Every structure is written in C-alpha cells, then in structure tokens.
Amino acid sequence: MISGPTGCGKTSVIEQILARLHRPAQSYTCGASTEFMDLVGQWVMVAGDMVWMDGCLTTAMRHGHVLILNEIDLVDPAELANLNAVLEGAPLVITHNGGEIVKPHADFRFIATCNGNGNGGDGIYVGVQRQNLAFMDRFNVIKTNYLNPDIELDILKKVTPKIPNTIAKRMIELANKVRSIFIGEGDDDNIELSVTFSTRTLIRWAVLTQRNKGAGCPLSYALDRALLNRCAEKEEVEAIRSLAIGLFGDSFNPAENEN
Image (cartoon, rainbow, N blue to C red; front, side):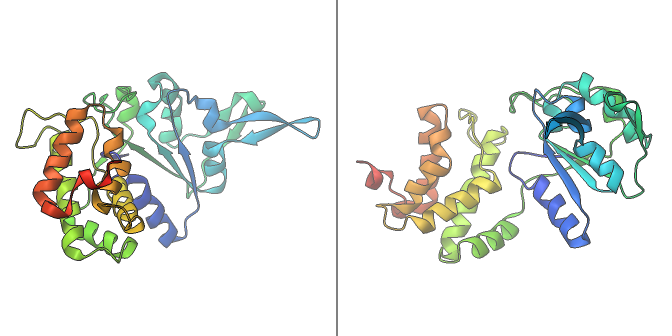
C-alpha cells in the first residue's frame, strides 16, 4: 500500500516501474460505491447469451498481472474484508460463477494506493474511510510525499522548456508554500486552505502559462485556471496570490487579466 497526498505520483511511479520491468497490470480506481464483485466479475449479455466476464482482480490472478487499486480507502471496509484471504495467497472462490476456484498465478501482485493510511485520514480528503485493522494488517505500507524541488524542476524543464529556470524555481517554491499551509505547517496560522498544489497542478500551471503567453499576465491567468478557481473562499485566493506576488514581484499582476 502506497499512501501519500493527492497528485504526488503514487500511481505514476508504480506504472513506470512496471513498464520498465515489462510487467502487465490491471488498474482500477475505487470509489464509495465500489463493491467486491466489481473486482471479481459479472454476468453480461453477449449476442443473446449470458457470458461471465472476469473483473480486474480475477484477470490479474489468472494471468499473473499486477493489480493496482487506486483510492482504496474510499471503499466500504466491509467490502474490502472480502479480499483478506486473497491477500494471504488463498485462491479466489467465485460463487457467482458456479463456485469456480481461481488459484493465484505465481506472478500475481496486489498494490493499493490511498491518501490516508487506513486510519480515516485527518479530514482533508472527503470520503476516506477508516479501514478494518485485519485488512490493513496484510499490507506493507509505504508513505510518500511530493517530489523534492530539483526533481520537480527537471519535470518542468521537460514539459515546459520555454519557461525560464528562474521562473520555474519560483513556481515550485510557491507550490511548496501552499502545500505547507494546506497541511498546517505554514508560517501563518491564520490561513487555512481547502486546496493544495499537487505536482499534477504544478505541471498544469506551467503548461497553461507557456500556452497562454498572449494573456496580460500568463502566470496569473494560468494560476487561476490551474488552482485558484477551485478555492472555496475568496480569502484563500487572496492568500495564495499574495504569496505569488511576494515571489514574482511585478511579473505577477492579476489585474492585467481582469476584464
């Protein structure tokens, strides 16, 4: 189980490792409505006949794939408890398909990602549920965080090569300031944010900045669309803009983009 904040690359790093190892994978994004049988399979109508279709779990177990279950802590703990035996290496018994027994292939692996670590989180991520202790006891848990600034700078260089290094470094600095405030580690205790600056958002900001160079202030124009328009309160927008002005000075002017 890989646990970490949104947009830090939990799923991406798994997919990149598996791609380099030439390992096939099944990837499934969970939600509050996800049920165990969604992973196992279902009967469907094909050309007038009912045909059994394997789900991602069954396919991975049959063929030795790596199963990646994203956002697993959004699922009802009672549903996930059905996975306990499989996580111990036991065969999968499909009662809905005549009691078929699917033995796990030697290469079958199970990886889960989540924003919490099974304890229900700290209220930041809506819908995250506290998981059953017996279920969690079957995992090796790896905690991750956002990339260090040097790596994020390398990413921005590749994705948006036309943005100068000095600007890119300040973009990353702003992202880290917002992250610190979001988790309550900022210098100003009076600021609370409902959004954070994931690596995904940082890349989106850089791409939009490079793409919209004709805007009055590309940095401000792009930041609004990448992050600020998602803020719940006007005070949040003003706080983040204030941080940006402190870093970019005259090159960051929101007024230039107002109609």
